[in-house]
Length: 295
Image 1 (cartoon, rainbow, N blue to C red):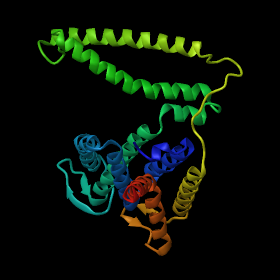
Image 2 (spheres, rainbow, N blue to C red):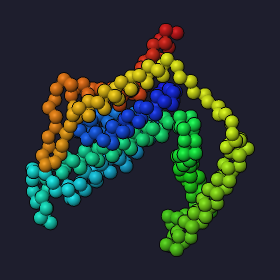
Image 3 (tube, rainbow, N blue to C red):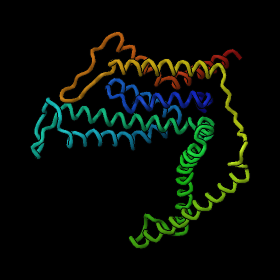
Protein backbone atom coordinates (compact mmCIF):
# COMPACT_ATOMS: atom_id res chain seq x y z
CA UNK A 1 0.00 0.00 0.00
CA UNK A 2 1.39 3.38 -1.03
CA UNK A 3 1.18 6.09 1.61
CA UNK A 4 1.04 8.82 -1.04
CA UNK A 5 -2.05 7.10 -2.45
CA UNK A 6 -3.91 7.82 0.80
CA UNK A 7 -3.52 11.57 0.32
CA UNK A 8 -6.34 13.71 -1.04
CA UNK A 9 -6.90 13.46 -4.83
CA UNK A 10 -6.07 17.14 -5.33
CA UNK A 11 -2.62 16.51 -3.81
CA UNK A 12 -2.00 13.50 -6.05
CA UNK A 13 -3.24 15.26 -9.19
CA UNK A 14 -1.28 18.47 -8.52
CA UNK A 15 1.93 16.49 -8.06
CA UNK A 16 1.53 14.55 -11.32
CA UNK A 17 0.42 17.67 -13.18
CA UNK A 18 3.68 19.40 -12.27
CA UNK A 19 5.98 16.40 -12.69
CA UNK A 20 4.57 15.05 -15.97
CA UNK A 21 4.25 18.55 -17.41
CA UNK A 22 7.82 19.46 -16.50
CA UNK A 23 9.11 16.11 -17.75
CA UNK A 24 7.55 16.81 -21.15
CA UNK A 25 9.07 20.28 -21.60
CA UNK A 26 12.30 20.47 -19.59
CA UNK A 27 15.11 19.37 -21.90
CA UNK A 28 18.07 20.23 -19.68
CA UNK A 29 20.14 17.03 -19.15
CA UNK A 30 20.15 17.51 -15.37
CA UNK A 31 16.36 17.90 -15.27
CA UNK A 32 15.93 14.86 -17.51
CA UNK A 33 18.18 12.80 -15.24
CA UNK A 34 16.25 13.89 -12.15
CA UNK A 35 12.92 13.03 -13.78
CA UNK A 36 14.07 9.60 -15.00
CA UNK A 37 15.71 8.52 -11.73
CA UNK A 38 12.80 9.68 -9.57
CA UNK A 39 10.17 8.20 -11.89
CA UNK A 40 11.97 4.87 -12.07
CA UNK A 41 12.57 4.78 -8.31
CA UNK A 42 8.96 5.52 -7.43
CA UNK A 43 7.62 2.99 -9.94
CA UNK A 44 9.81 0.33 -8.31
CA UNK A 45 8.53 1.36 -4.87
CA UNK A 46 4.96 1.02 -6.11
CA UNK A 47 5.20 -2.15 -8.19
CA UNK A 48 8.29 -3.89 -6.84
CA UNK A 49 10.23 -6.35 -9.01
CA UNK A 50 7.67 -6.22 -11.83
CA UNK A 51 8.57 -2.57 -12.45
CA UNK A 52 12.27 -3.42 -12.71
CA UNK A 53 11.48 -6.20 -15.18
CA UNK A 54 9.21 -3.97 -17.27
CA UNK A 55 11.69 -1.10 -17.37
CA UNK A 56 14.61 -3.33 -18.33
CA UNK A 57 12.73 -5.37 -20.94
CA UNK A 58 10.76 -2.57 -22.61
CA UNK A 59 12.03 0.85 -21.52
CA UNK A 60 15.77 0.28 -21.82
CA UNK A 61 15.64 -1.13 -25.40
CA UNK A 62 13.28 1.68 -26.41
CA UNK A 63 15.66 4.26 -24.96
CA UNK A 64 18.62 2.77 -26.83
CA UNK A 65 16.66 2.44 -30.09
CA UNK A 66 15.42 6.02 -30.02
CA UNK A 67 18.88 7.29 -29.14
CA UNK A 68 20.28 5.50 -32.20
CA UNK A 69 17.51 6.49 -34.62
CA UNK A 70 17.77 10.27 -34.07
CA UNK A 71 21.38 10.69 -35.36
CA UNK A 72 20.43 8.75 -38.50
CA UNK A 73 17.86 11.41 -39.46
CA UNK A 74 19.06 14.50 -37.61
CA UNK A 75 22.37 15.84 -38.93
CA UNK A 76 22.43 19.24 -37.25
CA UNK A 77 25.35 20.27 -35.11
CA UNK A 78 28.84 21.65 -35.55
CA UNK A 79 30.82 18.82 -33.94
CA UNK A 80 31.17 16.26 -36.75
CA UNK A 81 32.34 12.83 -35.63
CA UNK A 82 32.36 11.19 -39.05
CA UNK A 83 30.36 10.92 -42.27
CA UNK A 84 27.76 8.23 -42.85
CA UNK A 85 27.77 6.13 -46.07
CA UNK A 86 24.96 8.38 -47.34
CA UNK A 87 27.29 11.36 -47.07
CA UNK A 88 25.42 12.98 -44.19
CA UNK A 89 27.44 13.95 -41.12
CA UNK A 90 27.15 12.19 -37.78
CA UNK A 91 27.32 14.93 -35.15
CA UNK A 92 27.86 14.83 -31.41
CA UNK A 93 24.94 17.22 -30.87
CA UNK A 94 22.47 14.94 -32.67
CA UNK A 95 23.60 11.93 -30.61
CA UNK A 96 23.24 13.76 -27.30
CA UNK A 97 19.88 15.22 -28.36
CA UNK A 98 18.66 11.72 -29.29
CA UNK A 99 19.68 10.36 -25.89
CA UNK A 100 17.99 13.26 -24.09
CA UNK A 101 14.79 12.93 -26.12
CA UNK A 102 14.64 9.20 -25.41
CA UNK A 103 15.25 9.87 -21.72
CA UNK A 104 12.41 12.38 -21.71
CA UNK A 105 9.93 9.91 -23.26
CA UNK A 106 10.94 7.05 -20.95
CA UNK A 107 10.69 9.26 -17.86
CA UNK A 108 7.20 10.43 -18.88
CA UNK A 109 6.12 6.80 -19.31
CA UNK A 110 7.50 5.97 -15.85
CA UNK A 111 5.58 8.85 -14.29
CA UNK A 112 2.39 7.85 -16.12
CA UNK A 113 2.74 4.29 -14.80
CA UNK A 114 2.90 5.77 -11.30
CA UNK A 115 -0.09 8.01 -12.12
CA UNK A 116 -2.17 4.97 -13.07
CA UNK A 117 -1.38 3.36 -9.72
CA UNK A 118 -2.15 6.45 -7.62
CA UNK A 119 -4.93 8.28 -9.48
CA UNK A 120 -7.81 5.81 -9.55
CA UNK A 121 -11.00 6.40 -11.53
CA UNK A 122 -12.98 7.43 -8.43
CA UNK A 123 -10.38 10.10 -7.66
CA UNK A 124 -10.58 11.49 -11.18
CA UNK A 125 -14.37 11.61 -11.09
CA UNK A 126 -14.25 13.23 -7.65
CA UNK A 127 -12.06 16.05 -8.98
CA UNK A 128 -13.75 16.68 -12.33
CA UNK A 129 -17.21 15.15 -11.94
CA UNK A 130 -18.86 18.50 -11.28
CA UNK A 131 -16.79 20.49 -13.77
CA UNK A 132 -16.92 18.15 -16.78
CA UNK A 133 -19.19 15.28 -15.68
CA UNK A 134 -19.65 13.56 -19.05
CA UNK A 135 -16.00 13.90 -20.11
CA UNK A 136 -14.64 12.78 -16.73
CA UNK A 137 -16.89 9.72 -16.80
CA UNK A 138 -15.81 8.79 -20.33
CA UNK A 139 -12.11 9.19 -19.52
CA UNK A 140 -12.48 7.21 -16.30
CA UNK A 141 -14.36 4.38 -18.02
CA UNK A 142 -11.84 4.29 -20.86
CA UNK A 143 -8.87 4.08 -18.49
CA UNK A 144 -10.65 1.36 -16.54
CA UNK A 145 -11.68 -0.59 -19.64
CA UNK A 146 -8.17 -1.02 -21.06
CA UNK A 147 -6.69 -3.12 -18.19
CA UNK A 148 -10.03 -4.94 -17.78
CA UNK A 149 -10.05 -5.82 -21.49
CA UNK A 150 -6.44 -7.02 -21.31
CA UNK A 151 -7.22 -9.25 -18.32
CA UNK A 152 -10.30 -10.73 -20.03
CA UNK A 153 -8.32 -11.29 -23.24
CA UNK A 154 -5.78 -13.31 -21.27
CA UNK A 155 -8.56 -15.44 -19.74
CA UNK A 156 -10.20 -16.09 -23.13
CA UNK A 157 -6.87 -16.89 -24.79
CA UNK A 158 -5.99 -19.43 -22.09
CA UNK A 159 -9.46 -21.01 -22.36
CA UNK A 160 -9.16 -21.29 -26.14
CA UNK A 161 -5.71 -22.80 -25.78
CA UNK A 162 -7.11 -25.52 -23.49
CA UNK A 163 -9.68 -26.30 -26.21
CA UNK A 164 -6.89 -26.76 -28.77
CA UNK A 165 -7.32 -23.35 -30.40
CA UNK A 166 -3.88 -21.89 -29.78
CA UNK A 167 -3.08 -18.87 -31.95
CA UNK A 168 0.64 -19.61 -31.69
CA UNK A 169 0.45 -23.16 -33.06
CA UNK A 170 -0.51 -24.67 -36.42
CA UNK A 171 -0.77 -23.29 -39.93
CA UNK A 172 -1.46 -19.68 -40.77
CA UNK A 173 -5.08 -20.46 -41.65
CA UNK A 174 -5.63 -22.32 -38.38
CA UNK A 175 -4.08 -19.51 -36.34
CA UNK A 176 -6.18 -16.95 -38.19
CA UNK A 177 -9.36 -18.91 -37.38
CA UNK A 178 -8.36 -19.15 -33.73
CA UNK A 179 -7.65 -15.42 -33.67
CA UNK A 180 -11.06 -14.67 -35.20
CA UNK A 181 -12.73 -16.87 -32.57
CA UNK A 182 -11.01 -14.92 -29.81
CA UNK A 183 -11.94 -11.63 -31.49
CA UNK A 184 -15.58 -12.74 -31.69
CA UNK A 185 -15.64 -13.71 -28.02
CA UNK A 186 -14.05 -10.44 -26.94
CA UNK A 187 -16.42 -8.38 -29.08
CA UNK A 188 -19.42 -10.14 -27.53
CA UNK A 189 -17.98 -9.67 -24.06
CA UNK A 190 -17.38 -5.95 -24.69
CA UNK A 191 -20.96 -5.41 -25.87
CA UNK A 192 -22.42 -7.33 -22.94
CA UNK A 193 -20.20 -5.39 -20.54
CA UNK A 194 -21.39 -2.10 -22.07
CA UNK A 195 -25.04 -3.11 -21.64
CA UNK A 196 -24.47 -4.20 -18.03
CA UNK A 197 -22.67 -0.93 -17.27
CA UNK A 198 -25.50 1.12 -18.79
CA UNK A 199 -28.14 -0.80 -16.81
CA UNK A 200 -26.12 -0.40 -13.61
CA UNK A 201 -25.76 3.35 -14.14
CA UNK A 202 -29.46 3.72 -14.89
CA UNK A 203 -30.48 1.76 -11.78
CA UNK A 204 -28.29 4.03 -9.66
CA UNK A 205 -29.94 7.16 -10.97
CA UNK A 206 -27.22 8.48 -13.27
CA UNK A 207 -28.33 11.66 -15.03
CA UNK A 208 -31.24 12.40 -12.68
CA UNK A 209 -31.30 16.09 -11.61
CA UNK A 210 -30.30 16.67 -8.02
CA UNK A 211 -28.56 13.35 -7.67
CA UNK A 212 -25.80 13.47 -5.05
CA UNK A 213 -22.53 11.55 -5.00
CA UNK A 214 -20.86 9.82 -2.10
CA UNK A 215 -17.20 10.56 -1.42
CA UNK A 216 -14.75 9.15 1.10
CA UNK A 217 -12.13 11.84 0.51
CA UNK A 218 -11.49 14.46 3.19
CA UNK A 219 -8.93 17.25 3.08
CA UNK A 220 -6.99 17.42 6.37
CA UNK A 221 -3.88 19.21 7.69
CA UNK A 222 -1.58 16.54 6.29
CA UNK A 223 -2.98 17.11 2.80
CA UNK A 224 -2.71 20.87 3.27
CA UNK A 225 0.98 20.70 4.17
CA UNK A 226 1.76 18.39 1.25
CA UNK A 227 -0.19 20.55 -1.21
CA UNK A 228 1.57 23.72 -0.06
CA UNK A 229 5.00 22.08 -0.44
CA UNK A 230 4.18 20.78 -3.92
CA UNK A 231 2.79 24.14 -5.05
CA UNK A 232 5.79 26.07 -3.71
CA UNK A 233 8.34 23.71 -5.27
CA UNK A 234 6.43 23.50 -8.56
CA UNK A 235 5.92 27.25 -8.82
CA UNK A 236 9.54 28.02 -7.95
CA UNK A 237 10.76 25.52 -10.55
CA UNK A 238 8.43 26.94 -13.21
CA UNK A 239 9.39 30.55 -12.51
CA UNK A 240 13.07 29.63 -12.45
CA UNK A 241 12.76 27.93 -15.82
CA UNK A 242 10.94 30.93 -17.31
CA UNK A 243 13.74 33.17 -16.02
CA UNK A 244 16.29 31.07 -17.93
CA UNK A 245 17.70 29.02 -15.07
CA UNK A 246 17.24 25.80 -17.07
CA UNK A 247 18.09 27.21 -20.47
CA UNK A 248 19.86 24.65 -22.63
CA UNK A 249 20.30 24.35 -26.40
CA UNK A 250 21.64 21.46 -28.46
CA UNK A 251 21.94 23.10 -31.89
CA UNK A 252 24.01 24.30 -33.53
CA UNK A 253 26.29 23.73 -30.53
CA UNK A 254 25.62 22.47 -27.03
CA UNK A 255 25.23 25.45 -24.76
CA UNK A 256 23.51 25.91 -21.41
CA UNK A 257 23.03 28.58 -18.80
CA UNK A 258 25.98 29.14 -16.50
CA UNK A 259 25.64 27.39 -13.18
CA UNK A 260 24.94 29.74 -10.31
CA UNK A 261 23.39 29.64 -6.87
CA UNK A 262 20.03 30.50 -8.41
CA UNK A 263 20.33 27.80 -11.07
CA UNK A 264 21.37 25.21 -8.49
CA UNK A 265 18.39 26.11 -6.31
CA UNK A 266 16.05 25.51 -9.27
CA UNK A 267 17.39 22.00 -9.84
CA UNK A 268 17.24 21.33 -6.11
CA UNK A 269 13.60 22.44 -6.00
CA UNK A 270 12.82 20.22 -9.00
CA UNK A 271 14.56 17.27 -7.32
CA UNK A 272 12.57 17.76 -4.12
CA UNK A 273 9.37 18.07 -6.15
CA UNK A 274 9.97 14.80 -8.00
CA UNK A 275 10.95 13.09 -4.76
CA UNK A 276 7.89 14.19 -2.78
CA UNK A 277 6.13 10.77 -2.82
CA UNK A 278 9.44 8.97 -2.24
CA UNK A 279 10.17 11.17 0.80
CA UNK A 280 6.64 10.54 2.08
CA UNK A 281 7.05 6.76 1.74
CA UNK A 282 10.45 6.77 3.49
CA UNK A 283 9.17 9.08 6.23
CA UNK A 284 6.13 6.91 6.96
CA UNK A 285 8.18 3.70 7.00
CA UNK A 286 10.66 5.28 9.41
CA UNK A 287 7.88 6.55 11.63
CA UNK A 288 6.21 3.13 11.66
CA UNK A 289 9.46 1.42 12.67
CA UNK A 290 9.96 4.00 15.43
CA UNK A 291 6.47 3.30 16.78
CA UNK A 292 7.03 -0.44 16.67
CA UNK A 293 10.29 -0.10 18.57
CA UNK A 294 8.45 1.66 21.41
CA UNK A 295 5.98 -1.21 21.86
